[in-house]
Image (tube, rainbow, N blue to C red):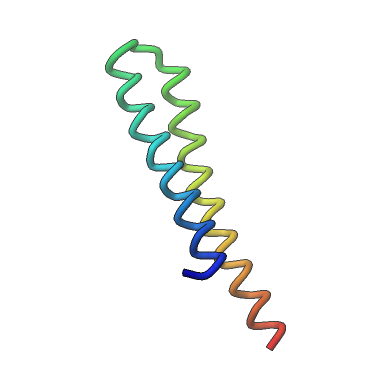
Length: 64
């Protein structure tokens, strides 16, 4: 597994975990603000992993 794939998977797993926890907390404590913050951080982590992967692929293609 290459370095960019590792970062993508790590950020993806943490992002998905944040989304799952936000849904559980929404049901358990019914606090929308905390749930939305965790949900948005999860989405941003996933987007960041995708963007990092694409940028590393672009840099590798430019270098060749």
